[in-house]
Image 1 (tube, rainbow, N blue to C red):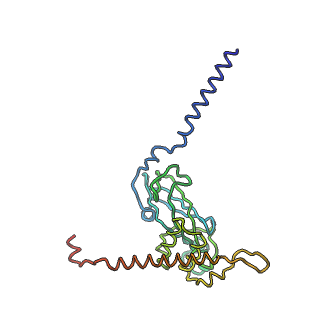
Image 2: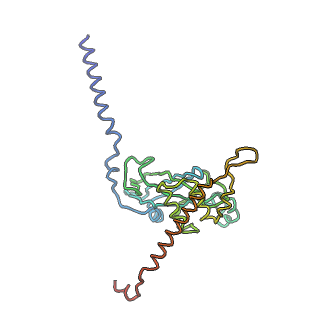
Image 3: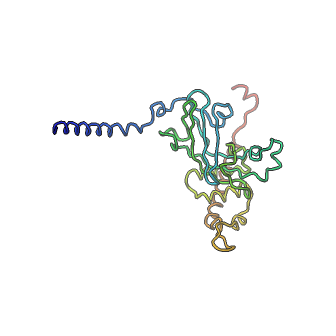
Length: 267
């Protein structure tokens, strides 16, 4: 009897040791994902070609989630842009045909945008090259993205409102918005600093008006400032740096030599 108990105990210890050895391996990504097979396609080009389906759902004015589904029937590596924008789909918001959307445009929530930090997160199990999603056929990847509003004075984005993901350049009223959001993605700035800069550039809100904007109520008829003086100071510096970057790029492009039609035909 005692021998039987000793044998049973030994078998339990052996089973426990085997389970401990196997457990870490179970957390490793499947080989087909770890190798990241498949062609590389750009997000918006692939969406236009119907290779992928792209959706964006805001949580609030600070964060959203992008969902990318592979519809191509083959493995794809989807290259993400550094920045994005999301616009409300007005006809769906109002339950109106497209020609009726304009009448209710004032009720539409804010357009929003931000950087896309494409590292491994959410349902990604392994690290792919930064900026690239590996998506097997008929599967979906998703990524959380930070957000700031781009239409001052309009309602806050929310999950019940349908949005469409678009390139930032397609809606930007000032080219300096792109380097502002890209700089935010590098982790150098507080969100409220970027929000002030974004409203100033995208909605032409003056620094004076932003300084007067009310935040949280602290007492009856008394509110904290929405932005601190230091945040506005940083926002001004961020906007100046972004405008300088845009000007330098425009200057560099203007200095590039142009070729005559005859020279182009020789290529």
